[in-house]
Each structure stands twice: as C-alpha cells, then as structure tokens.
View 1 (cartoon, helix red, strand yellow):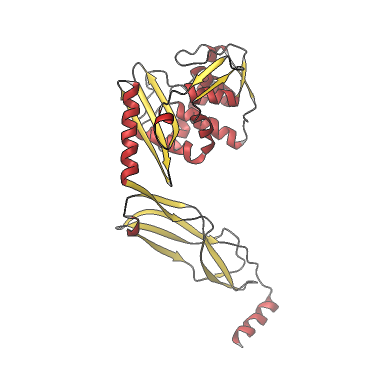
View 2: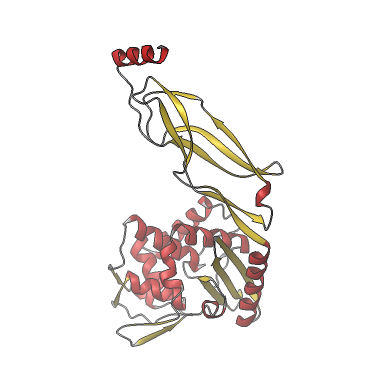
Length: 318
C-alpha cells in the first residue's frame, strides 16, 4: 500500500508542492506507529529526501505518516487523497484506510490494482529509482542503518524496484519492476507464505514476460510523418508530426503484424498553430486496436495578408 503513498509524495515533489530539502516534523501520531519503522521521535525532523528513503528502503510506517501529515495536514486527509487518486487510475478493487498498509478492516486491494499504481509511479516519476535501487544507506549521520527489504535488486538482472510489504494477515507481498532494453515489466505477488517465495515467484513472472514479449515502438513524439498543404499561409506546407510517444506490448515475433490507419487532413487553412491537431493514426493487430496518437502541426504558419495571397495565387497559376 505504500506504493500509493510513494506516488503521492513524488507527485507533490514534481509539482513543486514540496521539495527534497524541506524539513518534515514528527507528530505524536507518526511516532506511535508500529511495525516497520525508523523509530522517529516526536518533534524530530528529517528532510523529505530522508523520509522518502526510509519509506522506500525499509518500509518505515512512521515516516509514511509524517509525510502524509506534511502533504495533507493529517493522515486521514492524505488517505482521502489516496482513495481519490486510486479512482482516477481505475483501481476499482482498492480501498485505503491508512497510508502505511498495517492491517485494518476494509483496507483492501488486488494484484491488478497494485500493478496499476506501480506502473503509474515508474512511468511518470522515474527518479523514484534513486531510492528503490538503494541497497544500503544510513540516516542521522550514520546512526540509523538502512538495508533494502527488496532482495531482488541484488539478484535479478534489470530490477528497478519496487516495493515489498508484509503483515500477519496479508503475509508476504511484492511489486517487482524490471527493465531490459525497451521492455519494462511489473510482477505482483501477494500472500506468499515466506519472503523467499515472493521473490522466487516474482522472478518467474518476470522471466516469462521477458522471454515471451517485446515492446513495439509505434510512434516517436515530434517525428515527422509527412507534409500537407496550407491554404492562405505564409508557407505552402506544414510538417505533420506525432503528438506523443506510443508503443505496445506484443508477443515476440509479432510486431510485423501491426498495421496502421491514418485519418489526416489533406489541406489546412492558415493560421496554423504548432501542436494543432490535424488528424489521428490508429495501430491494430488482427483488427484489435493496440495504440493511437494524434497527428499535429510541427510549426506555426501565419496567415498571409490578402495582397500577398493574391500575388501568391497568381504566381502559382503562372
């Protein structure tokens, strides 16, 4: 469950709401957390950077609550934000009751939902790996030692994270992420009887993914597609480019079966604004859509004044 806490922390950092150097105060409520912790003392302060390190590396419950209070004012307000974000991401099996994952009635999720928030965190906040790949570190000028609970970062080729979790009811759980070449995968294992089993099962899932699938690049942002005619513009044509990077996961050896269908204007009237949507391209395999992106103008094209336009038309006729 700390994956959502980590996601909201990274969103707050990347949006400028907080920064890594901010000092985080510790309340009595944060200090009182049980389970995995770094034994924070009330009125002690650590930086956001240090708190995030503690949460990511050793799953510190006290640090999670301190960060929740920093961002939202209280743990409860933060939990409301967690649930709202879960709905936005389509995590329909999840209800958060706290920010740390300690067993509580009604605090539930699924492997599918864990994969969704793991993907969101890794795709949109890649600097989280500055923390998830730490094996050993320390806090409080070396007085508090940290050793990563995710043993896969030392044993599995390509591991990028992400998060372990265990309670007496949930048993041993893991969201494991790894990247090899262009392919990044998430493997989620829940309710393993031992810690070793979760790592072994996650490794098997990732092995299967890397052995049987590949990432097919469909479009590259700002790459030129073609040029189309511009009417009444200071230029006669405008370059059309892909609006976004797009790609899809396909079984190995099937990327050659991907087809594309383009819906694009043949002529556009000036003025044209850079980024203006001019069409769309859709990619399919055996009739099933696997990706799409808009086709947009690669530059601004101003409208020509009437006299220049008339002269331009005469020159074309001649």
